[in-house]
Image 1 (cartoon, rainbow, N blue to C red):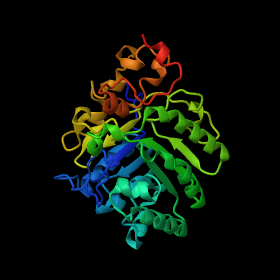
Image 2 (cartoon, helix red, strand yellow):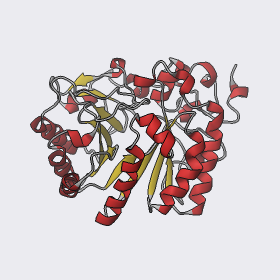
Image 3 (cartoon, helix red, strand yellow):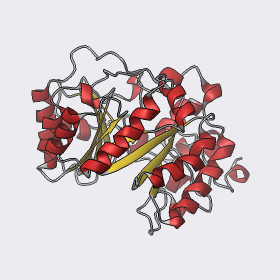
Image 4 (spheres, rainbow, N blue to C red):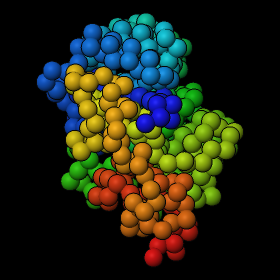
Length: 349
């Protein structure tokens, strides 16, 4: 295998499954820590391996990152070696201790989950003060001059909040906002009736493009939104650039690591089927370059596309869109429920 061809430039790393919430849409069913989660020393070793492999950006997730003691030491090792490092938090535990940790870690930004206006956000988080805590967190970060990004996970019930959220985030001075769709996995596995209606995806792409043009906040579409409608060139790259979807990057430029050292192409592929190896048994390099690993993307061919994606004239470029979205919504790795390419249906044979 050509080791230059595949570089894990982007890593999403679940440090712990321990969480102080029990969110309705949580794909990992977070709550209790896994048995024998990686120690800080083990994580520092993994961090060194990421550096050696040419990783450029690491996002720490949970559970709740602040519940993993020593996370800031791992983050600092990476940031001091030139990587862009951020975390995603629910913001509930934010206080002086966490602010000190964030500054020590030298994070690029802090991502906060906000899943609607007050009623919908609190309902999804199962905590009636969660929205209030997020608003306080925004104010604390502004005071401390710490850059903030917001991540919003959409289901059918909070979709209509997007327009109000935009006004709120602009008012709060938030500079970056990623919008993604909840997949029916984890706590949502048996709640497919609650996931976003695919007919609303074109409204999301239109929303993102229009709000980008206002130049008040940088809005990004998650990998599971699209693909190839008239708004596609304005969804993913830095605002002001044209950047079209070029296929799922899991196992190509993206790697996912869970809290006990399992390696997958992406942390959105939350099924044991996608585990390629474990860091307590093999090095990251051995797992990353092992022949046959990440085959769903490294060995992709348009003949693999199924259902409504089969024979699509964008298939060689799109490759079925987000692999996790495909797998959890259609039970196929190669058919996408959330594609809004206008010509797609007429290309189905």
